[in-house]
Amino acid sequence: MSIGGWFKGMLARVFGGNQVGRSDLPGNIVERGVDFNYPVIFVPGPPNHNASRNRDINDAALPFTPEEYKKIKNEIESRQDLNPLMKQEMLKEVIKRNPKWVPEVNTQPKEKLNPSSSAIRSLRITPDNKIKIQFANGSKEYTYTGGNTVREAARSVLDLINSPSIGQALNRRVAGSWSQRHYDAGAAG
Image (tube, rainbow, N blue to C red; front, side):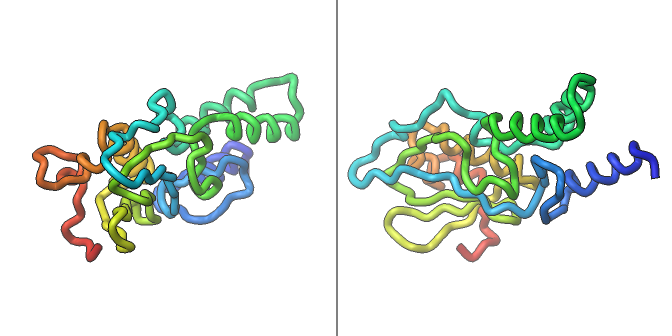
């Protein structure tokens, strides 16, 4: 098998749409199969209007994409001044320093996004790209649609955590609210 064929095969294994599992390559990028937690600062009491959210940081809410990984890998591989081990270590370091999270490697954002709410306690993406939210007044998690890929689900979460008020965005009675657009009527909870 040629090196090009081997590399294409590895990329297919690492970047496959329904691939779940680790690869020996650094920066494993997958489309499905993650359980990813977005820490929420729960502030009991009156609405705080998502006051703690660091809105200067958005990339940290999103996963590293296969296209980004491939571009960085190709740039590093093209460097003639590095040996293969140095290239591999450089790739690991570049991915580690990138604010975006790596599916199946990171379990929460690399940087503190600080969404705050008096309405919810937890927010996460499930392996089937659904969004689960636990409200402050109960222990049950409610399910919302995220998208077909983990990237789409993360973009939906980013939309929610950038809202002026997470609690108001989750009010299905408000026309056009995040909750109205993402409510999963087919889910039991």
